[in-house]
Each structure stands twice: as C-alpha cells, then as structure tokens.
Length: 216
Image (cartoon, rainbow, N blue to C red; front, side):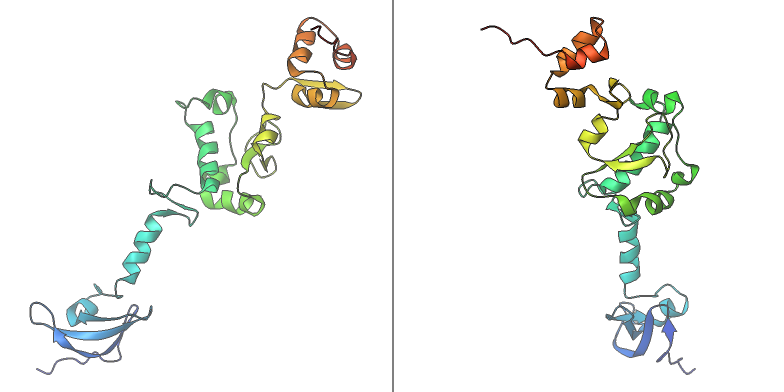
C-alpha cells in the first residue's frame, strides 16, 4: 500500500515541506513542517491527520501566556503582580459585593453599586482606560453615587482625601471646601478650625478671626 504523501498539505499552522530524514522514537515516519511562526519542526503523520499537531508548539505557549495574564493588563502570577488598572476594577467590585470585606459597610453596605456592564472587565476597560494614568486611583465624583462612567474619574491620593465622606466641608463667601483647604487658604490650623466649630463658633468667626500669637 502506497504511503500518502503529505507534502504541501496544511494542518493548522503547519505546512508540510516533505518527509523528515529522521523517524519518531517508535520508528514511525515523520514529516518536516514549517510553522507560521517561522520555526521548522518534525511531526508524525498521524498526529497531523488527527489534528493533534497544529503548530510547532507556539500555539500552546501563547495559550499558556494568555492564561497567566488578565486581559493583557497584568499577570495573575504572584511574582509578577497585577496591573494597577485591573486592580482598580477588582477593588470597586470587592467594595460593593464582598460582604465580609472591611470596607463593605462604606460601599455596598450603604447601597453603593456599580454599572452592571462593569461586571465584565472589558466594559470597564473601554469606559475608563482612555483617561487612566499611572499613579491615579478610581474615584466617584459624587461620593454617595454609584460606580459608573459618568460618576467616575481618576484622581491623585490628595484629591481622593478631599472627597472622603467623613471630611468636614465648610461653605463661606460662596466657596465650599474641606477644612484642610480652608486651613491652607486662611493660615489657621486645621485643629484650630475644628476646635472653634466644636466650641460653637460660626463659620465666619472660625475662618476670619486671627489666631492669637502664643507667648514664649
């Protein structure tokens, strides 16, 4: 029985160049193949015809690499860490969904949720990646609002500190800002402002009364 000539036949990424001068370990005929990636390899005819061999091995390497990464944003392997953008997505979902998390009471516990589309990383990536930069954290413009494209932005740590729900906001002369910013603007210490307010001073008195110099 004449053996089938596989020369010129394509199997997946492999194009058979001709019969290989070497045989397999069990003495079977092998075929020299050119892979689409540029590598040359030797494969048994049976593994080619039954679909077992479809590349020089590059396809499996690509799949393994893809399995060890998260949407191309960062590796799941501990030694390589995850991409901060991907971490931001994981963190917002954990705050809203993970009832045993130590921050849940401030988010999901008080009704904060996220855009249902963002249950898929791809949707979050499409909405928020264009405006992301290294070193920035995900923040909600309205701290009582949900996580969605319209209510989310990227902020520095300092900007986030000014947007916390426990910040003390004061409005004076048409301007509303946190105590930290009033302290910088007026030169009156942060603690002094809080002490005055606790003592019953009005906002105007608190922010306009000079601090008496302390004696030596």
